[in-house]
Amino acid sequence: MSVVEIDKLLEIEDLRVLLESADAIGTVRAADLAEIIEVHQLDAFEVDAVHRELDQRGLELIDPPLEP
Image: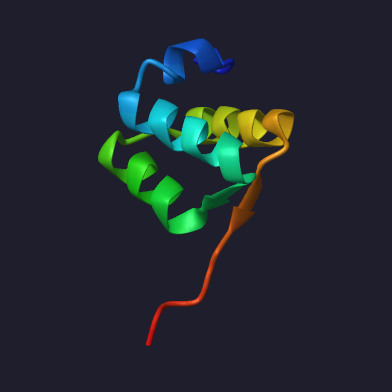
């Protein structure tokens, strides 16, 4: 599968909830996205589709520092 439809990926509830929450604040934590990618074993094409969706929604991927 070389072209991934984002609609198919949005059937993953964790991803859909993350994006909906991110829409409200404009950012996605890289760690949260990485966890979803790992848990659902998304391949490179699927990860690329997710990143395109982030761009399309105007969401910034951030990597905040760990709390001391």
